[in-house]
Amino acid sequence: MKYKALKIEIRRDNLQETVDALIAGGYESLVIDDPEDLRDIEEHPEWYKYDYIEESLSDAARKPVITIYFSDDEEGLKEAERAKAIASETGADCSISATVDDSEWLYKWQENFKPTKVGERIVVKPSWEEYSAKEGELVIEMDPGMAFGSGLHETTTLCIKALENVLAAERVLDVGTGTGILAIAAMLLGAERSLGIDIDADAVRIAKENVERNGLTDKIELREGDLMAGVDFEADIIVANLMADLVIRLSPAAAEHLAPGGIFISSGILDIKEDIVAEAVREAGFEIIEVLHDGEWCAIVAKRK
Image 1: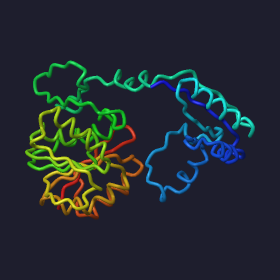
Image 2: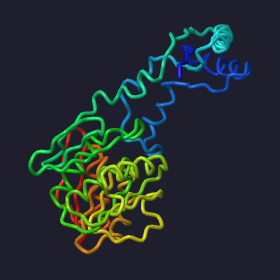
Image 3: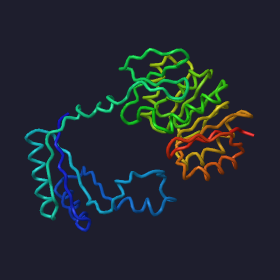
Image 4: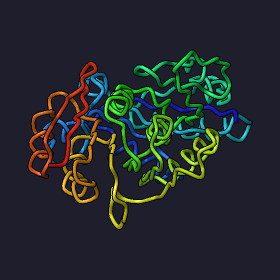
């Protein structure tokens, strides 16, 4: 689809006036980027569940920007000019982008997704790339979809490395499965059965496609759900690539769903939150046996007592 974007830069003290004027003019689909919105997140981390904020987004000196998208045709351009005139009356600086074809960027990310070895044995490759596995390698073929990444973020690779170190299990529970990569990795490493859970229906759909792509539909079950609520499944290993506060919330339930001596692998944890997560994991009845690090991220490997 081809479209044009109207970018409206405005002083913060005029932001609400501009928004109100645009809405009154019939333009309600506004994308508002206001650095001020991040101040509460930074000042009250106990209210918000974000572990990480891109530094550039926190630049308080940035002016707010309103974006409105229009179809790239005569009618769309006419509407963009009308909205520009309304915003300009409030003192905003406005510009209309050149024509953008979303097909130019929709799959642009694929150019940098190449077969990548993770840990000692697992290789992740996209379906559009050719790859010949070397001796001992286990290849996961996947098309992640733009919204769920390539599966090669540090937190995911830490989980795969942890699975390689400890996997001698029949049943694996993957909480927050995303693309399904960890459930698939567990099966390739020798598990007999995996259950993957994710709160996002689109993630479950993409995970099912990846499971089918790897020929594992008879061994991996995927469900939509909130963590382990309502799940009746005893696992030998639980892997949870989430974020610090969710790992803390999950830990008691993880202990209940693990067989005696079972392993709990948790990731998505910034190193600055390692201690508080580790304490929660211990309080839930686990003994921490290893902590893996990669940059600012860590994964905690714990054993149920």
